[in-house]
Image 1: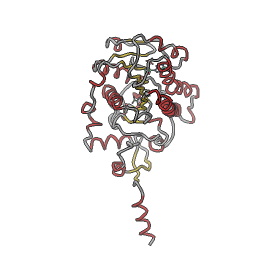
Image 2: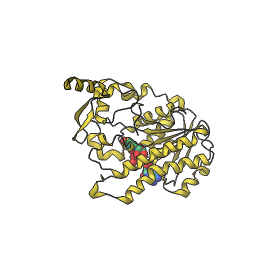
Image 3: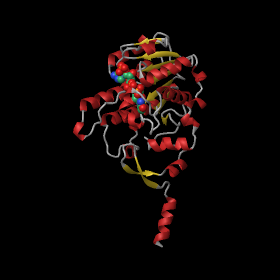
Image 4: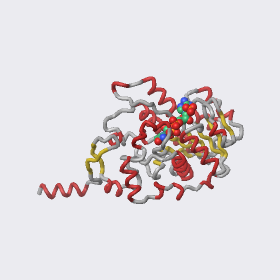
Length: 313
Ligand SMILES: NC(=O)c1ccc[n+]([C@@H]2O[C@H](COP(=O)([O-])OP(=O)(O)OC[C@H]3O[C@@H](n4cnc5c(N)ncnc54)[C@H](OP(=O)(O)O)[C@@H]3O)[C@@H](O)[C@H]2O)c1
């Protein structure tokens, strides 16, 4: 009787669980890959090595070769503004956009020779996204008129891991200011200045680190307080903004760009290959593919650009 009840209970459970190692070698309770594959329609997998391993096992071309789905021609002639376009993913976005025939508007603290070499339509320098006045005046510095897509890419992640004995509250506030308030300063300037209109898109590059639901799997021992709090705040900001601009016909995407080999993640170099980190040129194409997919119907959703599936809040 007890045995048959247990079997019944197991059959009713939506997922089975197993003990698996995470990227830092610790063991934790996780839904098994098979059960996750069954529930893949809506949500992607929290366990990044398992996510990458499954993509390879299933030869998932959407994940492994973004060029099989990304259509750059959809961006031709579009005016696309990118914050942090001087390096990292932002520079890779600018390169892909230029290659697609889009008109790039770089919004940066200072430009770089690589960005200048792309001959962008405009480069607005001196924009620190934590500066209220500079951001408010941003729309008046963009000369060429309406913008089709704003990609809020600029971000920050403290080099050292924060733990209880290394908490850095000023740095936490700085991170929240850059990653959560910064994109709102930039977006509000361009909306209030009339540059983002009906049909325009706003992309918020946040991070899977902002998913509260995924902390059990990705941070079973805590840590990285400032960065993860900032990205959770960025997610909240993005949904509020998506709701506020819905009546204006502006769509807001909330994107995790995937794991990219940039200065920001150089501290994780030893796990780049295990966890499927990619060259930023790949990450940029993934972001631009999801930008092309973004519509009023998908506005406000939190999407993993690696596989196009949702991340739970
Ligand atoms: N790399 C990944 O695997 C990964 C994963 C998830 C999410 N992300 C997100 O993707 C975005 C780009 O990351 P990345 O890897 O390219 O980082 P990165 O190489 O460190 O580049 C960061 C960019 O943000 C700009 N920035 C930083 N603070 C700023 C400020 N106060 N005002 C204006 N611009 C500022 C930097 O400009 P300066 O040159 O002036 O410092 C730089 O252009 C970030 O939002 C990051 O959180 C990245």
